[in-house]
Length: 308
Image (spheres, rainbow, N blue to C red):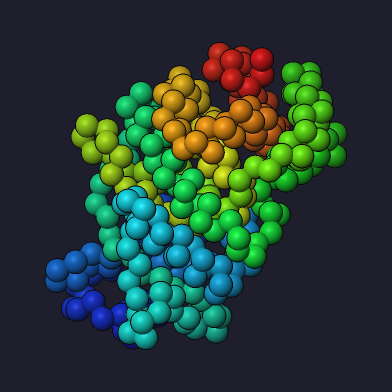
């Protein structure tokens, strides 16, 4: 019996007909499990996460609680299947290493290849709900080590240390962000859990581009809740179609943010967008992708919403 078969004996899901690996995703090993009547997603968590570092049981449990609260709030997210011990997480030994495992219901659907006005509106509505769900975790014991501001400032400093020539527009943006940060630090901006990975690959839409499901909460983190909107806008910045901001759908998305507290905090959205932009261009310059940086600096949507 191989490791996968041993793991599946922990679950009462009936006769298993087929298992196959899902090649997408880099943080974990994911498999489709098909039984006589249902399909499931089996996730074997990697030993560490690229953002949060080494995994522990409490962290995985927190992610799954986040998923379940999102479902209770009306977001169609995968349901977590308890094992035979009535636990959400199975702890197994694979190649003499302790690994964490979770089983989810399989959600059928498809992702869009590019944003439209309709899909942007739908995502904005979902972010409203995620704001309320994320805020329900505001009092947990958690650090802000991986928040968007810390990562942005650290990545730019890493760029400076390389000695790579930095375009003047980026240097000026850095100075502006530094000047504005002291004011941001004085504000009581809402904190809690964010999904952190709202991009087209992790969202399903129907034929009319109604949002039908949100997948993959594994990049969740404790942060400013405004980060959810920022990351939705900034994912896949290299693309004019897959990036929400560059696709020209900024206003459509923002216009759907109706939560009173979230709307109030979007007054500071520009600062957060600029920090995230600095993170991305620093990463691109470190990777010697200066052509993409020049493209971004001349992009009309970037100039309108970030540089001006």
